[in-house]
Image (cartoon, rainbow, N blue to C red; front, top):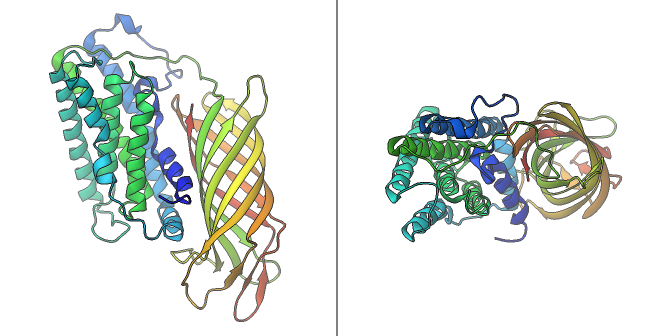
Length: 422
């Protein structure tokens, strides 16, 4: 993969990476007090509670995946702009890697949360059957066309669902004993989801929804196995207070608009996908932030969409400061300011002749401010809605056969961002 692919790779990894990265049982339960202490529960009660916590951690990801369908064309535009010829089929095999690791460890005699290999195999079989049944039912009911137009069974992504089912099975069996395994397994699953997007086989919404369904299927598989064998070695975890994060990752997907100066209906439309990190030093009232992103730009007249013919492609870097304000439990609003560097990395070789030529500097420096309502719905997963404006003093303009349009140095943007708390 070339170097330009890294930001989108990280973006897709984060977009697909759920709160399961540490433990599926880590769902925040501070909103309702636990009725039973973990050591007072019967096996049936304990397995039911574990399934409930797993379902509550997977459900928001499914919901976010459905919502991410609004970004389908946006992500495809970036994909066509930066990696139009990506064709690698590692995702056909990588989806099974975590499951192969789980079975290999068990065959090698490494103890996990299940008492016997048969209990592990039962969980694996039940989870896989659940995943196949659910995804197939949705695929042939929704009948969403694939990005490459080959068929109408795109939503949700079966490869991604299998990858996250595999990752969940490995994490539930060995994650408590080896805490580094969940990040590795979900990372591999996320790379599978990335491959489905880069290979033009799935939309971003397909991949994120498939990830949530895969996690849910893994929990159902272990619930069935634990109930059939009458025991479970997994532990319930309760969180009576909202944990204070010092480090979080976020993946904004935004749409920007830059109006032309003076008369005319032309404007500059941008599509942006990025990966960011925010760090709050101990005892600091402010957090430090930075992100790396990919952008595509094209002039548009009136309400015409961006389509596949984005002309200019940019790599951006942002560094800044921000502050969180807590509204109530789980709900915050963030305000931040940042400096930005934007670097031109390519231009489309062909585009319609009636579209304007875009002239932007090879690199430019600017600044921006942002306001972002945030909802943290599990210990490790949240959603934000970034709204902001950027100021780039560098001169850039659109030129049509009739005239030249200067563009405002101020642009406005909005979108969504998935958050992962570390």
